[in-house]
Image (cartoon, rainbow, N blue to C red):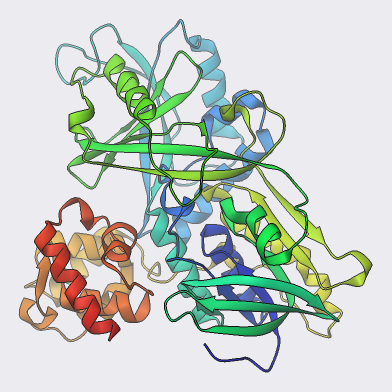
Length: 503
């Protein structure tokens, strides 16, 4: 890093979905924007979600009608913005009358269908499970409901927003920690440290956004050296991945006796993603992992509903993320609001500080829009003209196509040698960005060395040069989910290639 003589308009701390979304929105409105993230983009909570774009059916029980309405409206927006990484998904909800009565579920689903306008997704309906033939559920479950939501590649959503911000002039600095931020006159003076080289630089900015997620109050303590304005509750959500436990395209939403729900979601063709839990996380944020109790909890719920039983030996991998939720004095973790709060501090006409509390991946775009709107008056005072919000109608990078099927057919015509599995994965991961990987290739050999599964050297080079990927983990678990298929030897080969690119 080198010193920057001209001040930025906006410096954002945190490269999760909220930080990346704010960076894209701000850059698109003409603000000189810079984002720093202490690790890889989406390396914490934003890559550890249930990977759903959803209204939050269970939030209706907490009377979170505004949040559900906004989330349902955003579901339609995001399906348009990112058709490569977001897709419709139907959910089956088995009915257990002793948990929630049928009338309550029907009323909840009616509200879910009508709280916001549906454009692309079908309405909910009652269904029957044929226990003698194709139902994967135990025989005593014969009735239920079906409704629509959407699936998202969560980490790629973050990366694409960061790319969008960069395309509009923002500076994106992964692996860069904010070690100090202080007000000096009309500006923030911010000290950043490159976590690889340990080089330190100081830049100035007219406004500062604290979007550090679980570290939001840590920033106040360690970098700002002042008291945080709000208390947060660190809530850990954990997931397990097991071999596919049913062959249907639908996901399942399972009710448990404690009032919680558990999703069972088709994942990467051959697997089932199961989660999530809600547990208070009271230990270090440097060590976030699933507990044995959480594993047993998820296994028990699944085994109660499905004919095919699972146990701990079936778990291929797991992941956990901590959600920094605003402490609203709720009695239990599942009742804490998932809504967001924007805390603005500009007392005594000092340079503004905006801190982000809470939020969910589905509403990131509205949060980002609200954040930039809240800061806009400060830039108008500087003589800038801040344009109106623009993100609702603009596709994310790679999302400028009509359908995956048509794009896949186009690739088949232009690259007839391309294996079908690779064709499908490139479309689902990159959309039209896949042309940056395929380029003028005339045969599979032109993609370079096969590293493992269907990952070729050319794609690794693209991820290194265009998507900030530096480690095998960045590529295998955040830019893709190929880590489920890579052997130890293949991982070593990938690491060797990245070492060469890094040198």
